[in-house]
Length: 567
Ligand SMILES: Nc1ncnc2c1ncn2[C@@H]1O[C@H](COP(=O)(O)OP(=O)(O)O)[C@@H](O)[C@H]1O
Ligand SMILES: [Mg+2]
Image 1 (cartoon, rainbow, N blue to C red):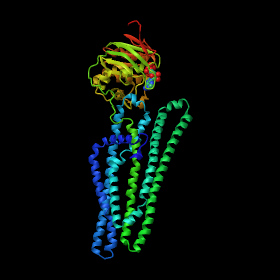
Image 2: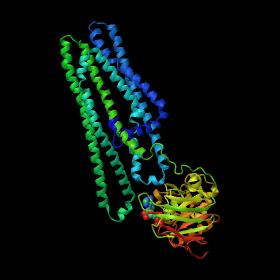
Image 3: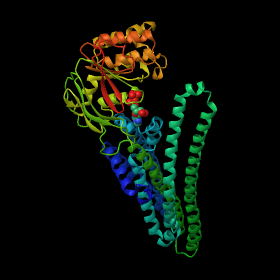
Image 4: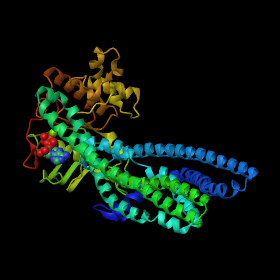
């Protein structure tokens, strides 16, 4: 539909629709059932005006009581049947749509999870939530749900218009004269509707993103006494979103008004001319009554068809925002070619590696260095020099611009994600803790033996830390681990990294901001854990770990080996 074209135009919409249809293949049966119900519903509705005409013109004037009862019974049966079928149609349609939507949501979330980190970081989390909730709510209006209703209404329109044409083609044409005009007008209004719908979805996403951020950062708002400032900025976005919605609603109301003008004008013409033709014996009174009934009966299906059509751009906008996250045919695996399953010993080689973030200058240039298995390597360097980035590259969260990273002699991207994540573990600067028990946060749903779990808790000092809780490792972590101190969170993060017994352990400033006692206890953990592992540690504190094999410093985009006394 050209009228739905926006900046990408029809091509883009075509792609979106095809992508969407690919998710509907499981719903062929349901759609067939809905179509069958729609046929039955149309079949029971269309004969009704003809029965009215017959009753008024033949049966009643002829005082044919027997036929009258039969016809009245038939009328009753058809009306009742139509009501029941329509009810079932609406019910089944809603159920199918609900099921489809929840499946789409679940698929979308699963695709979003696997989006390469680099792509995911282009989006704001609140906006992503809004896409998966609000935007996804608009899905399924036409397919799978509305299509049956749509076809039913089209059939009813065709059926009733045929009957009207049969009774009087002149009256049909005259009373329907404004339909083409009405349709043209509608098309013009659709363009604006689409634009406003799109704006509405976007501002709702922005609103959610902004409120979410402000609520998450509320502690800092309180600490800086910046309520007024944040409130003003929130109010601005709230008002903007409200005004966009008002514009949309105003436009929808305008379209509604056009709908309501249609039967008013039609009825005037119909009764004026129809009445005149009845007086001059061109039409029978029964025909005029049946005609009027049919004409009024048309209004519902017509307005329903138009309102379904006007929902389509809203749905397309939502689809556009959802599929923006994972366009069709887009590789959503982080390691698309990785299939190597192997035990990783931990030999790591950076060969002429260069990297810069998107739209930023080169951060690391021509890095060449090697790490032997079973050694402890420290990386030092100023803040913001690219130390954490080095880990991200090694974990394939970002891809190098040039050069290669080899693990046990094979390119990092040749390993399967499972192998890479199992064998190389990161303790990040700030681990994310989920709501759930401490144990859940350590195991993270992975298959882990009781012994490995206990081992990780012992080494990381988690067993020591949970002594103060009644429920031990089953104690609950609140949102983002707010009920735990920095050091406690760090120990849980270390246990999480150790629990699968990785051969390479990456630690990103694990003791930053921690006091001496916790530092000592984490140091102790690492000493115990390091046997047989390759450890790479980003730190400012070289006294932290014993037995350092090499120290590298990142400086001016390069990496250089530093002389030090081997322990
Ligand atoms: N996702 C990102 N997108 C763009 N720039 C980034 C991203 N992550 C980090 N940077 C930038 O890259 C530089 C190096 O960051 P990082 O590796 O975290 O430094 P370090 O760990 O040495 O303190 C910083 O200037 C930082 O702002
Ligand atoms: Mg860092």
